[in-house]
Length: 151
Image (cartoon, rainbow, N blue to C red):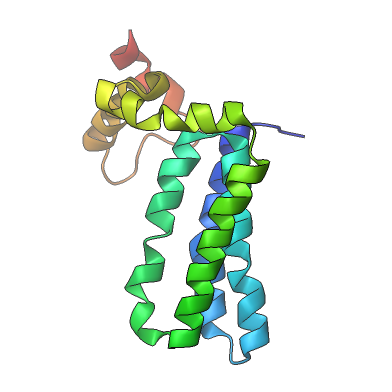
């Protein structure tokens, strides 16, 4: 079993817009509430992984909510605000201090331009994508394709 916290955080993050879409498409409110409950649970779980990449990606994924606010009733907006507030409280109570400290370094790492060494890899990946914009380099070939740029 793969126990990579970054992969787990990414999988949880990808579930956010999916759960939100399914919640909006449900005709029954109770069923929709169950799907909406995924959001605070995913938020807390992502904080527990202490994955900074997942944290940044989660902020992007959560952008779907304000984009759909016009479709929501006032009661739903209040419930979502309560869920969000509850998520923050749960995170502060249950997340280990080391996880919160690690996540707190995210902005400094981004401003410093290294983000755990990933910025260099991402730049090399963008260069490869520019060289092969349509078909890419093939399945499993990312490592060998960016290797010349990383040395």
